[in-house]
Length: 429
Ligand SMILES: *[C@@H]1O[C@H](CO)[C@@H](O)[C@H](O)[C@H]1NC(C)=O
Ligand SMILES: *[C@@H]1O[C@H](CO)[C@@H](O)[C@H](O)[C@H]1NC(C)=O
Image (cartoon, rainbow, N blue to C red; front, top):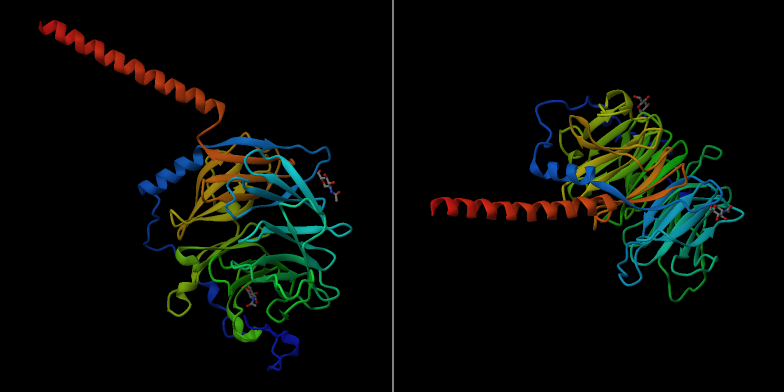
């Protein structure tokens, strides 16, 4: 990997924002001829799957009320040990659960600092979090030790409010709050070096010129370890190739959401699209395939989703995040109502379409979710302190009952067919 030079030491023309790649994100919404593909059998299948999501496990299990603000699951397959779930709590600690039973296994704290954000490594069961003490901490989620196995130190006065780990676990990138005109992206080498066994690491470098306000989101590409996208309250979503030496050249493109960015993610085949949500419930969707073409890169731009979405029952009060369904090659948006109902919407270039709502789970705002592509399960966490595991059909008692009724009715049918057969036969005779 190349060293990322701090932009401040880099001699350049001194302009504040590279302007050459701005401005193409304001194309009108494409509402032309392309019909959404929602009528395909695949779409019906997934709609049914979403509609069939049942709660299979609930964990409330805390005496003191806490909001569940972030969820991630371990990515390694250690079948005999089971998957782990890490949950960021509003009191600034991270709880580790086993995924099937939702038992609390252990807890990590940044004390006296507050933890923000939670992310598992891809190749081991390490869990990362940013801390208000100006560090990114990394724990081994299989160990009860309260001490982080790695500590990534920022520069003095850095307050990290976002971060991510590259898909090969080589690089950590964290975004800061704006302090004295500086909003930084700070990078570290996250590899464990057998020569250097120290557990504390200093940054490789920073990007300092592409955002002018708090960097609320950092998200690495799911398969290209050099691609990272950042989002900020300045409304900009910046896409970087960090294998390029300096910040200005590394910046591939800037998309303008025109509002404070609250969530970003990658979507589409080979993950060449980016979507973004804003703090005032706006939604933008861009296609990087069109960067070098005359096609507009904006696939969809909705100023306020609450005003345009047609929810079958009830209201949409807020957006939570997106999930790209690889098997279906479809982007879905998850939102909710203040009562705790979760709304699932599918995303097309002509708009968002409400598919189904998950009720009977949360009783307050849902703040976090994590979709598992392997078994199509969904974990949700909310302001009611509940962590819920949803799965399509299966296990729930009601299903078992329905299932046995089905068997009963098919037995009944066979009997009936048989008897009518014999009746006919008897008649002929
Ligand atoms: C945070 O909340 C959890 C559960 O409610 C509790 O076990 C833990 O001790 C709290 N942590 C801090 C740092 O207060
Ligand atoms: C983003 O768009 C808004 C609204 O159109 C505009 O005021 C702002 O200057 C744009 N930001 C940049 C950096 O182009």
